[in-house]
Amino acid sequence: MRWSILPFLMINSLLADGIPDKALGAIHTEALWFVGVIAVMAVISFVVSSRNAKKYAEKMAREKREEESGKSEEAREKSEAERKKRKEVTEKSKGDESDSSVDRLLELSKLHKEGLLSKEEFLTFKTELYRELKEIHVGS
Image 1: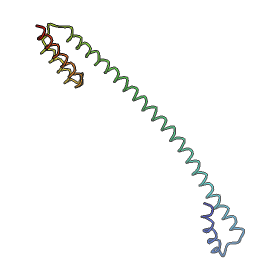
Image 2 (image 1 turned 180 degrees about the vertical axis):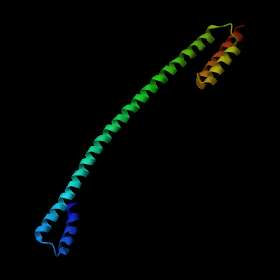
Image 3 (image 1 turned 30 degrees about the vertical axis):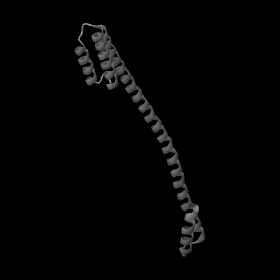
Image 4 (image 1 turned 90 degrees about the vertical axis):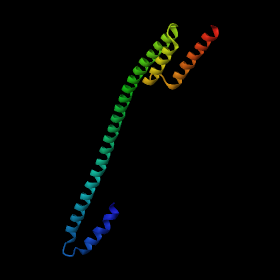
């Protein structure tokens, strides 16, 4: 940076005819102080900005983790409730022999439409229901 200012100062000092050498020295010193103060301010600004940026990034990461943990707790609670409901329905459908197979199939399709049963689970329960019906008909 000092080398980029030096040619400018040399040209100005050559063009400064009416100014004595003592006064030019003071002008050059003042110009160097001015440039030095600006450089120091730029360095301090960069250091402070970097420090604040790191603090802000840490704060944002912490908030994001807190949000994700809150969401994950809610998701766990929701999935546990869904599992309990599925378990109750499957136990009910297995335990009650008096219910017709059509009623069980309707309950399973209703759960599938509500999103409590995935497609694979629905198909699994459906095939088990058909196997039970086949065994009942073959056994009779």
